Length: 212
Image 1 (cartoon, rainbow, N blue to C red):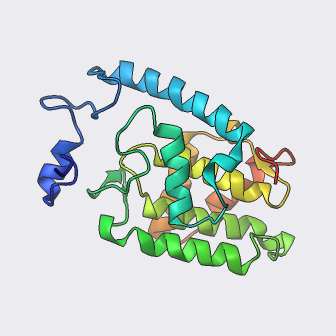
Image 2: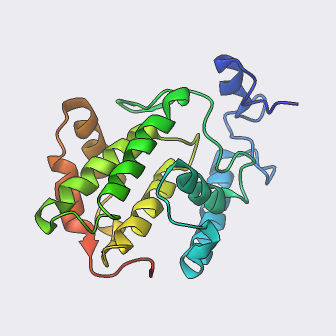
Image 3: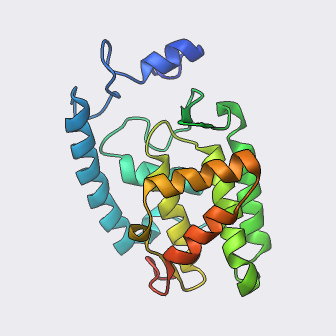
């Protein structure tokens, strides 16, 4: 029997993600209040994040492809959503941004995986070009936006893992959602990576989140 968010109809899929009669996403916790779900989600995801950073081998091989991205999301959100790690079945947008149609999600992620491996996991990128390459890849991952909820957190972990390959980390506390969303919008709408490069220049540090 198909899940209610995978019915074959975009309209039914959209409503199928929610608890009937509410605007609360279906969840394993049987929580029907938006704020309560947000708080519980934050706590559970933080616990899984700590676990992942202690034992990154839980994800398997670091392939940096769509399957690897799905494994990150599945690990982080496994306690909250039945569809953790599954690709979204609906089109979504956030503010001024429309993301990749569901059936096209594999294409931008395949491009990202190819760039990562052609550059030997970024080791082959000259230092003066690294910020632009990170911004370029982030733009593609953000456009793919594979998951109904939680893509941002999974994306940050994807890049923390990737950057650790070069011995650096990302201090996300040095930015906020307003700057990040604006940088993503400018990159996608105007093809201008400068705001994102500037953001990464400020948040990159010498403390990788993962060992390799």
